[in-house]
Image (cartoon, rainbow, N blue to C red):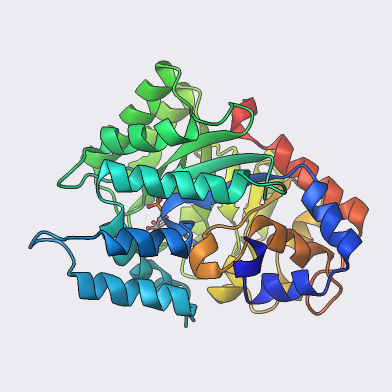
Amino acid sequence: MTGQISGPAANALASLNASQVDFIQALPKAELHAHLNGCIPISELQKLAHEYSPTSSELSSDVVSAGISRLQDGVVLDEIYDFFNLFPAIYALTSNPMALRQATRAVLAQFLDGPHPQCAYLELRSTPRATAEMSRTEYVRAVLDEVERYPRARAALIVSLDRRMGPEVLRECVHIARSLKEQDRRVVGVDLCGDPQAGDMEAFAEHFVEAKLAGLGITLHIAETPANSAVETLQLLSYAPDRLGHATFLDETAKTAVRATKACIEICLSSNLLCKTVPRLEDHHLRYYLEHDHPVAICTDDTLPFRTSLVGEYALLLAAPPLGLGLSEAEVRRIAEMGMGARFGRL
Ligand SMILES: CNc1ncnc2c1ncn2[C@@H]1O[C@H](COP(=O)(O)O)[C@@H](O)[C@H]1O
């Protein structure tokens, strides 16, 4: 897997000596922020593209092939909003339960299998999608069937709510998460994700209350871009999230509020660099949280477009500047422990 990465994480990893790589591989690490459809290995998407036979209402094979070729060649983004255009081609290939299960199996294997697994524990997240061939419940069940092939100590699922969802779909998704948890299926939390400028966050309040009452962990993509207002950020914080995704553009008031809550920040270094929300590694807000001994978890976000791996993201911590942050092994070990400590699976 590490052979397929490129860009900042690959450069950092290539600069480490063998004992540093062994150190990272042996560390028990938790991957807490990985989007299923953003983490499908390119080889798996190519297999699915080969079998793709669209109906007239679906994307044409040519459009899908062009999207997959773009991903294979390595995507260069001018800004974060370009990123969301990558998904229609991927979604065309995971729109029935069989293909979705196949893709999920490949994602789980990428993180959890082999002699040197990327992580000890994976909390995979995905947005329930209704298609001509499956309902949202069938979507989540298909993903869970694959997640539950691993022991509880190794894998679990977070149900993502997209900022573009209307009230009915939101209600349905939270109901699915809740009722599957009640049936002892392995849903451990809900997430808020999607285009950072879409949606009215006030409309989400009741759904997060319901999820929390049901014992689900809450994680929210927050302040991912400069366009996310301070008012929105404080509103999202009022939902008492257990973890926060990115938290890149928090002002001083929000930072103080976050530090008081001890909500773990899910940090995705390559994602932030490639989406250009953080200009250089040395400017990354991870430093602020480390200085304040605030919990963080190092994560990949979307391994396919960002061409990274969890080992690669940890290499960015350990590598000497300018390729990495130049942290000591003791500091990196502590960060890995914080990630393991923030699992919803432990709630
Ligand atoms: C750059 N960081 C990000 N910020 C916000 N949302 C993101 C994201 N990366 C991924 N997604 C969300 O996850 C979906 C793909 O996985 P699932 O279909 O759910 O498995 C994307 O469509 C987007 O809504």
